[in-house]
Amino acid sequence: MSSDLEVTALAINVAVPQALRWTDTRRGETFTLTTLNVRLLPDGRLAAKAYGRPAGGGRGAYVSFPVAEDPGLAALIADAAGRAGALWAAHRGLG
Image 1: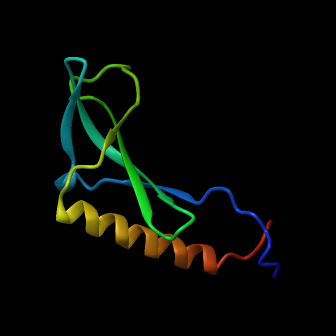
Image 2: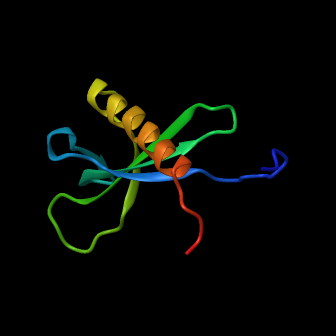
């Protein structure tokens, strides 16, 4: 395998379990955060954003928010990154 390959993005989407979901407000509208997008940065650190939909329902925009500072969410992100790494390492090629 060539170590000079330039991989420009490593990102995963993670469903937030019901018990860890939270709400946040933007422009007067409350959103329920249900998904995390976790990226592996070039220096090996993780970055994450939360996404959700209007808490009142409807077809509102899918909006990003900072991830709430919560030990459960931090553990979810770390566990998801580890699981994604294991899945990537065990890939079986195209097909």
